[in-house]
Image 1 (cartoon, helix red, strand yellow):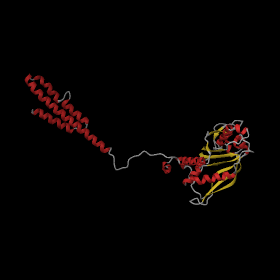
Image 2 (cartoon, helix red, strand yellow):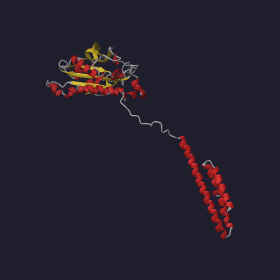
Image 3 (cartoon, rainbow, N blue to C red):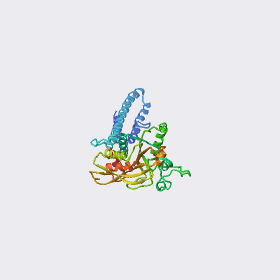
Image 4 (cartoon, rainbow, N blue to C red):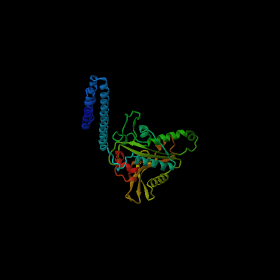
Length: 351
């Protein structure tokens, strides 16, 4: 038995010296492999008598089992050691705050657009939406814009295709006023029977918020920006109504009654007379400063005719404002480009 006990001792020592699984497999081969020491002892049984073979065979099998048990134990020890190293390398500091999925929020300009729609909706205005690639007729001609107007120039307008001799063509709309025309034309068609019978047509009261495009880019202008155009047409709509609408809108939008409004004479092809609209706050950092916020005017008779209405009977006003500028004033933003940079440090403030 001494030789077998020594064999077990050598196997235990060799297994203990193995520091990697590969080293352990090499050690296993020296004892349990096809040419291993235990295998050679089993081959030597053939030279013994039957009685010796029975006794010696049992002893060798016990030795083999002991060596296999030592091998299994060392394998487990190496696996545990490897796991311990991995756990230390991938340890988590449970004192750190957990990682949470961030929640999104509305863009500040989107907030303004929704606010504009809600306020005008409370005053009975519909909201119209339409194509951003617009026909030249709706964008310019129907709005009484002459053929030589600078806005038609390639320096100010993104044209999608070349304008045909008849004046047709497509472009990225330079304002949302074309939706005033589209909405009014559909409204007139809808009530054509009443108009033909001389009955009063229901008033046209609509706003058209959306994206617009012009060749312009600096701290206060962007090639793509937002506009909200408005239109109110009826038999007895006057400039007085325009002032009341603006006063109600701006005081509600900025949540203050300390706000003055003034109209300055101006010129727009689609309104006559025309006026720029300025506001001044009675308190806050902008106190006492007049700020231009919109353009407006009585709808030009030619535009009313293009709606399909008689300008001698129907009258009203139109206006246009920039939601981007209103957003800058409401939140104290001094650079328009911040709205389009996508910087989460900026946008997260408006959640």
